[in-house]
Image (tube, rainbow, N blue to C red; front, side, top):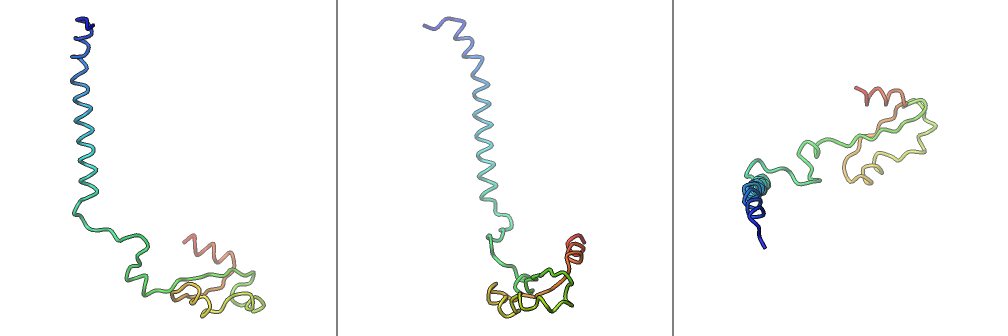
Length: 106
């Protein structure tokens, strides 16, 4: 049984429900437009760019005395082994922790 009060209450809610539905549809349309936008295509994940192919990876090994310490030379892989392991050219570098922190801070 609908009373006049319930009918009036339902009629008052209709514009709000209609507004919510329209806002929802606009949001969905906007998301679809953004996803299918014909803008500049972004590169797919893990695809190397041309600049990455030309440069080598830089691997830095940290030793107590940097490059001058030859006592640690037997502990590290050779440049050829690192290149084979990485699958791309590798540039090896040896430095102290202080030099490494300065390089990363700059």
